[in-house]
Image (cartoon, helix red, strand yellow):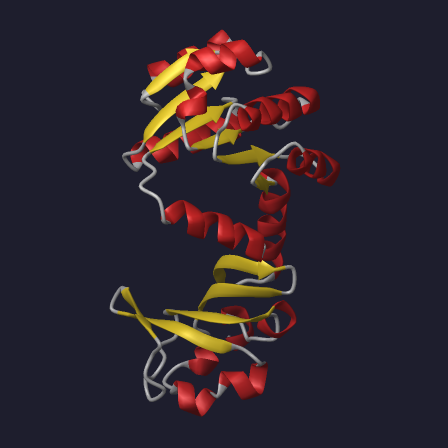
Length: 237
């Protein structure tokens, strides 16, 4: 995720948006519907496949679910989707359908369009037809898996750009009982500590005299190459 993505989400949070439309109900689209609906948002789900529509209805994963050919501008208009401020185009495997749908949604006046891409070229085309945010779930999952296999001790990662991240990681044994001041992680590793877990909650901007506990969690920010230098629980044993 880059800084343009941060701008998108910042603008989204500055609205009273409580409604989302999701077009394409494959695994990705279904997951988006389920999560938004569970969070209490009104979700309109749409797909041209009757089986997928029936599944969403049967599992109660959206407020409303309709059968829709989103490549048809008239059908799209009649569906009411253009009235939603945020629409997620979750069609990733059918390039033409994905691009045409994104174009139709944007031309219908939708303010914010998020589109799923299956490749860099696909993503470039989606941006050219108006997508405000392009996501690459397969690529991101692959990167996350690779990092989890090679960078043990990291629990969560938020990429600021290709070279910098914010990560939540497990405090290794070599840090146990030492204060942030003693460790001086900025000088030794080039990273800064943003938060430290304390009794199940995170303390933001922690006291430099606070002692760390092995197995707890800390949140740091820095260059990926520096984060990789941090010791892991495995290294500490």
